[in-house]
Length: 87
Image 1 (cartoon, rainbow, N blue to C red):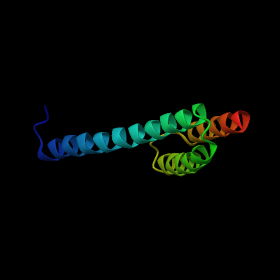
Image 2 (cartoon, helix red, strand yellow):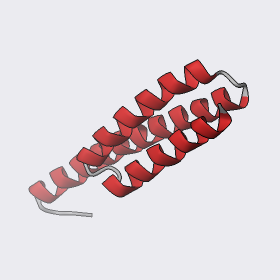
Image 3 (cartoon, rainbow, N blue to C red):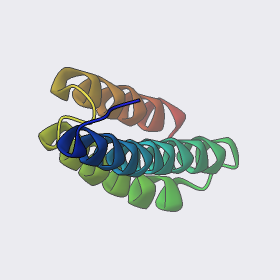
Image 4 (cartoon, rainbow, N blue to C red):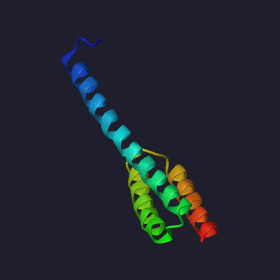
């Protein structure tokens, strides 16, 4: 455990930021699961709306260095391809 006051503060800040980042990643994964469920039920209008939300959230996460920008682009590309093939 840290002894210096500033080191203790950094530990607390890191803990808070880790929790926030984990929540954001979990939210993206939840939207992806909803998207895949919509495609499975052949609800393509809902899937299109979810894809827009996923795209926006992944791009924001890439800007904040939560995920790599290539990773975000790849996920959006694969989901778009999945939607187009299902329709």
